[in-house]
Length: 293
Ligand code: SF4
Image (cartoon, rainbow, N blue to C red; front, side):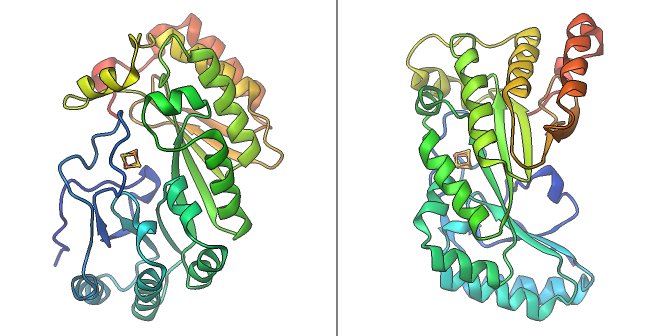
C-alpha cells in the first residue's frame, strides 16, 4: 500500500528516507522569483479526515517509521491546534519516532507566538528547514523573498530559543555578478549570527517556467555567475562564516558545481583549500548537464 501524493512533492535531501505526510498543499507565499516548486498548486490545508486516514494506513504498513516530514512548502502555516492534533496522532500511531520536521518560512516562525512554538515543540515537532537564500536585503528584495536580514535573524533565533533543530538553505549565485560580493558577505553574516545546526548551499539554476519572471522581478539585467565566479562567491562566504557554535555546512546539493562539506568554523581552512584547488582544476567540476535545482 502506498500513500497517493498530490504531486509535485518536495522534501529536503536529508529526508530521503522519511515518511512524508502532506498536511498542506503548495506554499502559502508562492512568490519567490527563483522557485517554481509549487506554481501549479494553490495553497490549501488538507482536511483532518484525509490526513488521519493516511496516518492510519502508513502506521499499519510501516510501523517502524522513525522520521517523518510534513509537506508541502510551509506546513508550519497550519493553525497550531491542528498541527498539535496531527503530531499527537502521529506519536500515538508510530512507536519509534525520532524526528518530525517540516519546511518553515521566516514569516511562519514570526507569526507563531512563543507559547505556540513551545507547545509544538513539546508535542514533538523537532526540526525546521528554513530557506533563507541570502542575507543581503537588496538581493532578497529583488528575488521577492518576502523576508529581510532582520526578519530572518529574528525568526531563526526564535526557533533556536525554543530548542528546534534548524537547517538553513542558501543559494549561491542568487545576486548574479552585480551583487556577488554583497550576497556572499551578508549571507556569511546572517549564518554567523544565526549559527543554525545545518547549512545547505544550493546553486541557482533557473528552470523553464520561472526564467522570465525571475528576470523581470530582478529589475535590472541579471548576469549569471560562471562556475569560477561561483567558487569565488563560495570562498568569500566560507571565509567570512564564523559561527560561535559548530555548524554542519554542506554544498552537496545536485545543483552545485562540486560537492563539499565540513563543520564550521573548524574545517574552514580545509574547505578554503579545496575551493582554491578546484579553481585550478575545473575538470573536476560536475558537468553542467548533471546539475539540477
Ligand atoms: S522558496 Fe519556499 S517560500 Fe518561496 S515560493 Fe518556494 S516554497 Fe514558497
